[in-house]
Image (cartoon, rainbow, N blue to C red; front, side, top):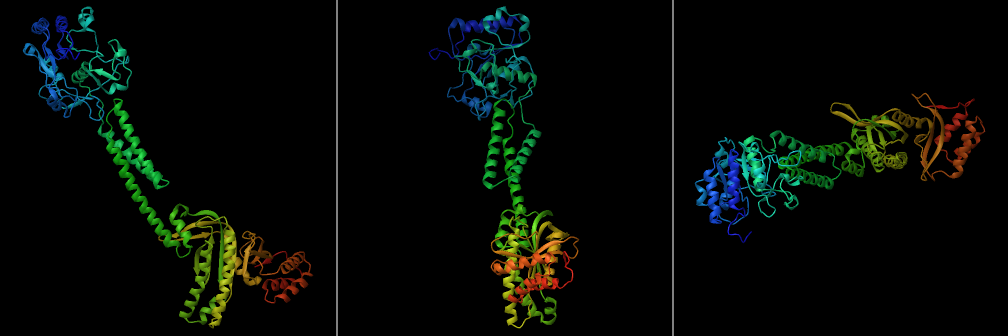
Length: 596
């Protein structure tokens, strides 16, 4: 074809016969998508000119306006070409109307989706056809063309081979606009459209030679003409669609941030969301749908994610400040740091959980306050309380309350700790040792400091924020707490330092116990076994075994236990628990339980 002296390989004598045949059938117009810019053989050119002159229907011929003209039509380089403009030969100019056959391509993917029906110089092919037929044109801008196919996967307008024209009924052509062009697999006039992913049933054979996914230029012009005549338009994103897409992007951004596990995953998920949105836009557009607004979706994701991150960071910062303010004075720094890293472990609402509770009380505190100067008692008491608070914090407990000289501590809250019994027991032993040393120190300074009694109980309690308005207090409530307070008070009766319940008793190599007996505490209607807690090795195995024998005899009502306890008291005249058991044996009839 490059060796031909003219661009169009269509024989002009054959074109003349097609024009004559169509004109006889009273068509509204004949539009030739065939360039007539160079001469061919003189006889055939003259025959085509004569057919144009004799035709009653208006004739429209396509032209190539060149690169500058194509840019004027499409506002971009529609077809990369260095070819100059190709006007119609003077032989045909007075006999036909002309219009440029520019096909606009989308710069994103070289797919034709739009057409211009008016407002260009020179006129477009479709504009020239509309002008020749007297059809009103209302569109001057680039208009989306509704590329669609019928149920049979064919174009929505009939297409025939010129070879069959003489056999076709006149009624098929009467008062119709007929486009004439070449549909040849050897032509370069094939274009990508939104139909590129559709399985088209070509009406011209051999279909297997047709370029895959493309349609011929004359069919593209037919689609544009159909859109101009019918007023139908291709898919366009509505304002509501843009709003919904932006809203979906905002929801995705917020959801990704609010459900984030860590920053790396969140950023990766945001990137995946943006990539997914871009792919959705691309495939919807590629398959002939509207060009969905990617930027509103992307901005929705990014802006909402940013706002959500900022709000969440503000909330987390406030939460961490609250945690630090509320617990830094009563919790060990590692525990506070853990709460600040994982604030979700701090449930501010009241929840039921198993905890250990420790109560302390300073013997003779009221008398001490009444007999000492304010600055002296303040300094000595503060030092005393520091010792206990430090011991609680070392074991991961939280100091719930300080009332005068008494301290209330809880373990396994706000962070759950399966070893809370052991921690409470070790904390009690540490407090006993350090307060005993502090007592001696104060006595050396002339201050009559008493001993520190401790009660421990374990069980379920309601833990959380309690209070009213701005006066909220993180604390625990329930019978478990009341029993711990009762056990601390019972030490005075039993002659012990640390009194623990059966529920809080835990076996550990550094701990040792002596049974006190079944006790009914004040406010409790059932007996519970309680124990004295002390450090392992503090008493010999022989003494512990003797005490156990004495307790077994006592509980059996055998007053022979008296001799065993008297021997133990000789070994340690300061053993308050043995003294208590001897006092019990003085009763004529031993009761099954002790009231405290």
